[in-house]
Image (cartoon, rainbow, N blue to C red; front, side, top):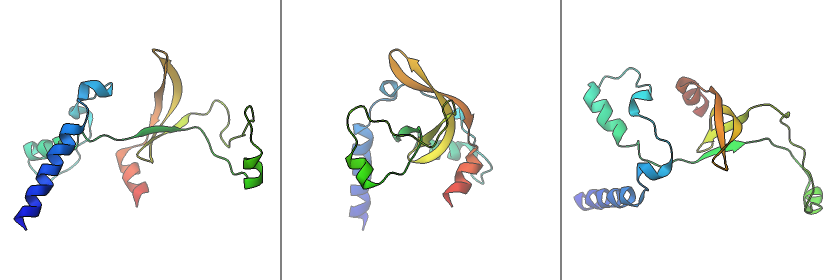
Amino acid sequence: MSENTENTGAEAAEDQAAAPPAAETGEQYSPDRFEKGASSLPADSADIKLDLVLDVPVTVSLRVGNTKISIRDLMRLVEGSIIELDRPAGEPMDVLVNGTLVAHGEIVVVNDKFGVRLTDVVSPSERIRKLN
């Protein structure tokens, strides 16, 4: 059984080594900006536990809108076709982290790339409530 624990530790080290350095992943934020909430652990223990996940990569995506179409209409799509979405023009986009809504924002251009300016951030307690 201790052999499995050693393998898991080695795999975790390999995963951590394969992750890109923080400097290469774009703008980074200090752990001090996260809400720690009430904890029965001493502050130092909470910081150590938080440090274990701070370098875990997540996927951030924007949801522009949705629509439902029939397979017949899908098969008729050609270059230049327009698909109408359910979101009104000018309304903020949904910002998702690993598929979970965390904020709303506006699309901006930064150094010839698209970005998002957050206009409303969902509170951590609301995010947790929606998971259940």
